[in-house]
Image 1 (spheres, helix red, strand yellow):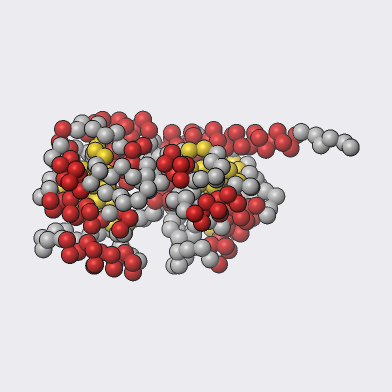
Image 2: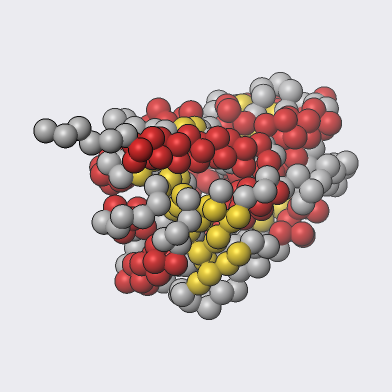
Length: 349
């Protein structure tokens, strides 16, 4: 198949540092290419994903959010990809552009929560597009939005290689905001007397404010400052960590960092919110903890977990080829349904 992929114009694919959606699309595009499909990725010019690439903007646009920049980007994308077999859109505005054009069938993945407003938007999208959820937890939050398929994210298992642990520290990986529970991670590490490395995006004013007001006051004078690391360095730190602390305080639709950690052989400690129970096998690849005290106690037990079991779980469930095959089946079904509808003759009155 000739498959179009559209991402927002905010971050290159793959991302040089933080960028969850862009990481997923990079792995999906490469996985589909490995399966023999002709992948056409509409992104920004700085992207390096090794498939056919097209762009309107050479560099990522500076203002993240729905607006004129994204609208121009998706208009150009749908025009460029008009002759592919199917379009998979990862933007907010694109599916509405596709709805007014007589083009290929459209698949849309919701990479965020199904808030009340987003439910309304996706119900509207579903009249013209096929909606993918990224976890069963997210599907339960979708309300009356029709979900075509639930497909877990996949990662490059060659990038996230098995690691031995033994670094004498635990890690937090994610954005610097309250929903990610960074302040809880600091509390847990200090109560457990563990060194904590925070690998975190902290670029926006709200992120810096949260760090200054909620996180820094909990840290000791010798605690390492948070840093946003490039992928290779981040992977090395996770491979040698004793555990990943992921005290998410909201129903996160997936949680890519948990799958990446398991691939590195590093157990995951998380609150049982969102998709965490779909990723972490309690007592085998990590611990799902009800509160801070349970997570502190769990840190004393992570050494009893088999790091090879963590890696095996990731290999069986979260590889990019598994993700690509799941999407391939969905694409073929949608294209076949479209073809069948076109071939059915219209009754003559």
